[in-house]
Image 1 (cartoon, rainbow, N blue to C red):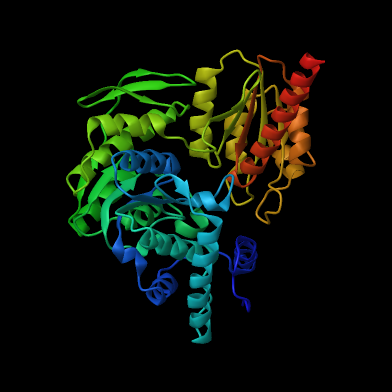
Image 2: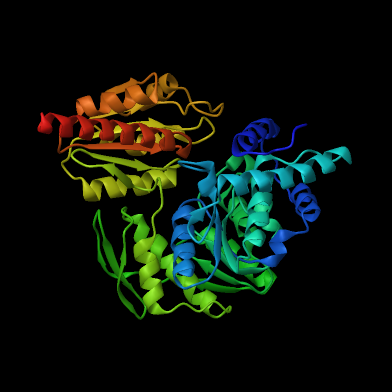
Length: 445
């Protein structure tokens, strides 16, 4: 497939673009063969494995940051990237370097080419990146790593791991129905596939049907199920949020969004379980890790006056949580939304849940993605719920249009697929920098 030696980051990215032509394939055989060629690097690390429909990334952020603060060499692997491919693979909060990405990718490429020469299918992009993450964690001698399942759990490439200290299940909804099943029970069975023999299972709020499946799988695997309790003493805010959980009083997080308290509670319960698996964490380091956690693309404030917020709500469950946060934080505010989704998502339901919040909706398509729903098609769907909708030809046009419509007390909210939010964030940041520079020069003049 690729006849050159990968010597730099640019070549590594070009290689991944070529591998992308392989698409998505569920199943573990190919991943096991690839990892085997690399000497099974995943066997050198303990893991926290996270699956579910919404909240996986934020829980991963909380757990990995707390473990890092506690002094453990901690890896983390998440997808998709928001700002840079490098951010997907981190150790102690630092993304893999370009040099290590290229070096590791060349190692993985050689293993993949050898498998193809033996007559096996070429590994998928996700399998290649997952193998790279495992390789890097072993290279950096990680004690523990936090993994986010890519799709489902049972047949996801990350699920070749054997040393699972904790399996974490965020709320499960009707996600990837074409790939994972047509009912909530079938999807829950796939997500619960990350549960390994005799590991701890930490479970957040679940639909009773999904919870019953999780309990069944725990019984089959001899795993201990721990369910979260409700947070107490909650104080919401855009800059800081406060809550108490069990015997920990007045915990503080910096992530905005009402749903982040629920994610933080799941992380705290996970840390408690890890303490019984050889990874104790003091309350002081728990507090420090919660406060220091940042997670891009989750009700993240890019600018103020007006507020410009991005959120990766790309399914109905995420859209519902986003709706609740917008109503709670921004009652009676003028809201302009920018919306972009993939065509394999339940975009009509997402539009139904969000369109009426906005004075004006601007639709966009994720640049360079074959899965992106065209902006004009999305606008047609949104028009069923809000007549004030415009399709933008580019992300730059959408940003400029939103600022023209807003005043300093308005709220601009961009949401949907993470595939476009990273690029859009760069456009907003560059626009804000130009504005500050121009404002500064005019003051000096």
